[in-house]
Image (cartoon, rainbow, N blue to C red; front, side, top):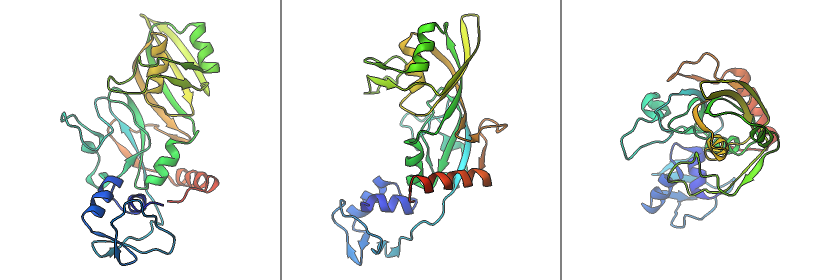
Length: 254
């Protein structure tokens, strides 16, 4: 793999930080200073940063965090808004999130110190479960779209104002339940197996249904359970076992 990816997978440095270390001449490959950021690292190669060996990461850590509304899933915000890392212990400052929940959403968020695992889970078809409250009625047209999926040439309603993604292909929902409507609002549970940019807000926005509340309650067999807002926990043993099975089946190396 490319050297910056190798560094980010096996240290607490991000790829961007790895690039900066290379530019500063602080990285060596087999005792030669690296100047080409596109160079690849093989199994027998020796990488050092500031003279210290980069050891292959043999294990990883996973945590579950109950993201609160009004928190951003990012390291820093140029407008000074609160991020999840402001609330998490400092020891998790280098952890990366598996996907994101937008500023107005809440619920289960997974984080890890193994970027390769984060990427694999984000791109997987593992089911994600959400509870939503939308403004408006769920018509038969919307139900058909949930069952069959559809392509939207303009899926900008519900998107972030700065998003460059306009069109979107929506896959059929894995499952959904409509709990009922009152006061002009509808509550429902949905299960999808992908995590595109603001996918649910865009989906319902296409039908002029504004998502008022969105809460993720599970990712695969990892559940939010009774974890309170702003709290976190480590993976349980059975959750680690499930994840290791997933990594082995999909030949994911971290």
